[in-house]
Length: 276
Image (cartoon, rainbow, N blue to C red; front, side):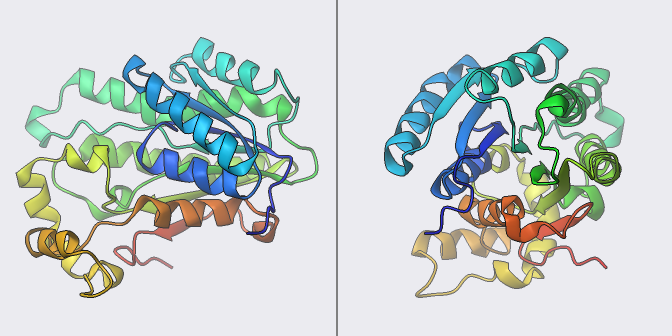
């Protein structure tokens, strides 16, 4: 595989598992060194093991750092860790996020404040802290992980969907403000295998089944998908995306080949959402 990111350095938030871990592997396979950020102590061993495996498999440097990027001090710690070995931060993947779903009458102030702090303030603070370390030749890459929830109006996602819409709005603003330093894009996954999707309630899953059934690439294929995937799709309306499928789109946006693409929300949802 071409190592098109040889010598570059990326920060990946929420990098210990799920989409974040898959993105880390994709970037590592392209020769990119990594700083993987995680928040909870329960993710420490996962991050340590992942860093060790990626370092040995792809001959890159990978380190983990526990910090809450939803705070100024946490964001600064991640950046200082990244720049302790090399001064330039080439890639930022704002992936960390939470979903605290509730129907409108039940939304609490805590749910609102915590979800916006993690999903919106976190990316803003981290990108802000890294500004002075971005390239000056437009070779930098920032990719924000959004969601189809920003556009689909899923029941129970007043708050989560709003945070992802805010992230997409910041993507467009940053693409102009940082044009001399980096391209800035977002990707918008739909249902993806992993711990975040597993937290959804049966009511939420029933509500989005119709969306899944009409998503072109979610139709399960006998002989291609596993029997377990095919069986699960009968109740959910379609197969979930594999994390590496989303990571592949993110990785593409980080390569030199993507230099003429900025300010965009790129499909990473199998065609669930078709815009423009």
